[in-house]
Length: 170
Image 1 (cartoon, rainbow, N blue to C red):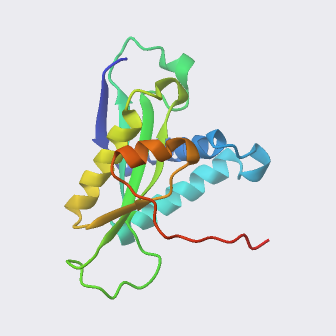
Image 2: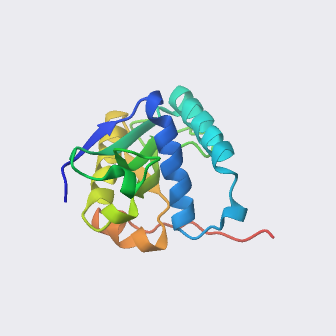
């Protein structure tokens, strides 16, 4: 496998992050009819990332193919050098009345690795980079929602199933 560098993203990287996020949903089985059109989805994700940076200390992490000999056009012309990404932020579902030193949750989402690059530990590296970002923000715990195929990866990293309960409302 070629050299892969991880780096924290900037707002200039948001279009690539949005494309990765869109591909992630496609890869887990949603049909195009269930998703917004790619341009609308990209716009919505970029707006979300902007708000997250302002309000929830959001960070993106990108996996960049450092091998200049790789045929990136054949792999994914829209992503270019970006072969994976992940996003992390403070977790804010409800008002937090606890002191940060008691409990401060971070949330990891949008972990994506290009299909041709899966199975080589890149998802773990992206997740670990997000954990480092959350630690730097003072988080005491990290939460994520795992796709069924990725559950083993997160369990190997130390994540544990929790007590979330869910009901379909339709």
